[in-house]
Length: 158
Image (tube, rainbow, N blue to C red; front, side, top):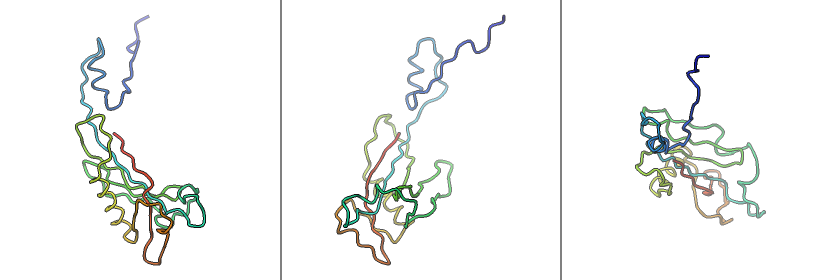
């Protein structure tokens, strides 16, 4: 029988290091591409813990997010789909991801300047919110004109 065109196949699924792994693999052709890292940073917010319980509000599953009922997607550009603002099933609000080019393939440290930009994006989309990194129950005051959110997490992916 004639040999199949696909007698054997290797799938390169090494992510951001795909080009360097292929370049160092014996008998493999040089990669026809270069992997370029992009940083995606998120900020995650939730209502502060209720003063009547010790359980943070962000751990109570609910679909009734009083701040955001639909995801907000900006108009995409040729460089990025934009930064989203969306609610989760756990009453959290997520802002992100960013899509920033960087040279390092391993640097996943949080960038404080980007964090400030994500905070500003949240306040632009939901202007009647204020954020705090504190989980102090005294921040649970909610007035007719202001909703308080607590930063509960940050994430960077490459």
